[in-house]
Image (cartoon, rainbow, N blue to C red):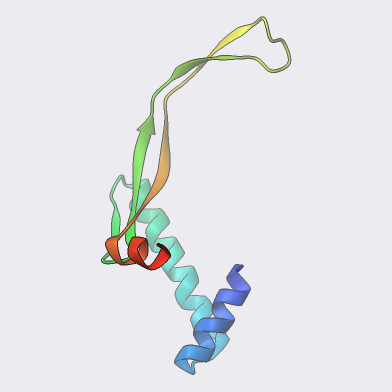
Length: 91
């Protein structure tokens, strides 16, 4: 399911117009992104938690020159941890 399909399904279930749902979904995305940029987390009880983690640096290999070693620096990445309700629903 893509974003457009998600908007259509939510609009059908809530009897709201698609434009309003699209604005709400875009706003949710923006809020989650802003909070993760600040290093916080967004907890949607039962659904899951959006958070950030630091992936440690490591040694790697240059794909163009396999005999050349490179150092991959540490980087902060976005993560999602599913909640209990989501886990049980998928089982």
